[in-house]
View 1 (cartoon, rainbow, N blue to C red):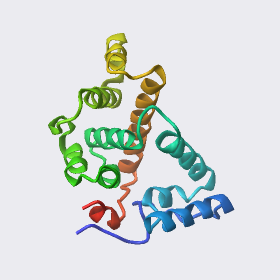
View 2 (view 1 turned 30 degrees about the vertical axis):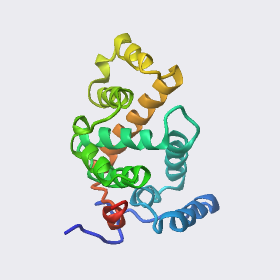
View 3 (view 1 turned 30 degrees about the horizontal axis):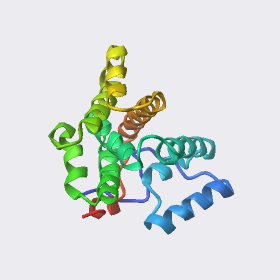
View 4 (view 1 turned 45 degrees about the vertical axis):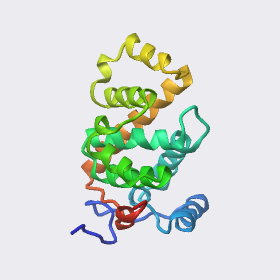
Length: 190
């Protein structure tokens, strides 16, 4: 059974005094999805860190990009699966299920993205994202050329790398503090 309590991490950190902007952000989460994601609650021990995390996340995942929001979520799941990040696999797997309307897509990406029958463009995107997460030192011009050959722009390549890098960092942080997904994620999109 999933442990659910008032503390989203294994550390004894208490919520700081949040800025009106962050308080409004939490209220918006409750309005849109019915709860405040535990990742935000975890960062709430330090308002400055919470603001920085939320701003960077929102820019990477929600701002205009040549990548769809679903594709960015797919990157989050594929990278998080490679890093065995319990929190992000569950939370972003739910987002993929909801956005795609396909429960099998989120779950299969979480187990093995290579088992999903994806268009070649998305497969190349995920191959590159996983390479960023696991062996970024081995990326060379051939990898970027393969993305260009599938229609990705220079900005798209940057965005794939940025999302993969952000989730690699977030995965490591979530593991280090034993961040637990909200129970609500498990039933979303099913």
